[in-house]
Amino acid sequence: MRNPALTHPPDIAGRQADALSPDRAAAHHASPARSPRAVGARSPERDKTVSHALQAPVERVRTQTAKATQTLRGLILNGDLAPGERLSEADMVERLGVSRTPARMAMIRLQEEGLLEEIPSSGGFCVRGYTEDEVLAALEIRGTLESLAARFAAERAPTAGELEELRACAGEMDAVLRRKTISPSDLAAYTASNDRFHQLVGKLARSPNLARQLDRASALPFASPSSLILAQSEVVDLPVILVIAQDQHHCIVDAIEERDGTRAESLMREHARLATRHLHRIFHGEASKLVPGHTLFVGVNPSSP
Image (cartoon, rainbow, N blue to C red; front, side, top):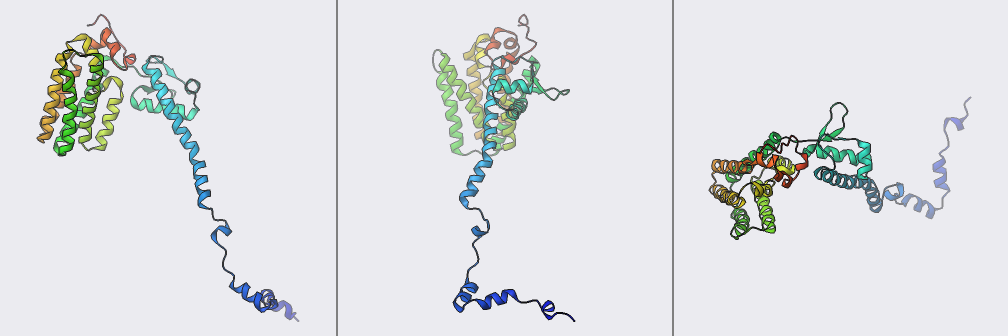
């Protein structure tokens, strides 16, 4: 025969509840549920601390990458690293004073800018050199993109305030050209206003995709809008060139204001070609040393001009 005690197990919890006094039983059944924090929930302060702890290594890598990129770019543009020179990751870690990840990321970024190129056989990088034809192509690519930006700017109807800002920028360059002689500081002021003028036209295009391509095309130091101005002063009558360029600036503004996209595009394309008119003499002469990024030039023939 089965033991009744085994067939019907005792209600232990019930007996414990019955054993409580009326007051204790009431308190037992009325006790509130435990708060989330009591079962292991994290406080906002702890979440913030954990988040900062996780972000710290990411921020450190980002900061080191920016530092490494700037330092490496300087080494290339100053000529400390010559065209064709191989860059090993181990050497860059030591030379740039960062860990391996920032060093490699810096090399990848400068490859995107066109200062380095990948070595297919090894996956490493070397400093890229530029022939005269490649410099010309870089200038023409930037000019083609800017001409498209001028057309977009005209077709997308800039506001009166935006046009006024563009005209004011052109006015700053007018003020420099009205002076009898142009000093080095005057020329620096002109080039700053010229760069800003081109940036404003790109902004008026209202095209993020085009803006990214323009930034990339202008990242090469010898392909920026003002890159050849100082060198031109050594091979031609610079004030004459600047007067022509300034007239083109005003015509571009007029075409944008009149919403004539075709004319704005044509004018900007011709304006870009003005910079390349004396490239051969600059590239192969002493004036090349006045061009930003001239340390990347290869195939220079001093007897060519």
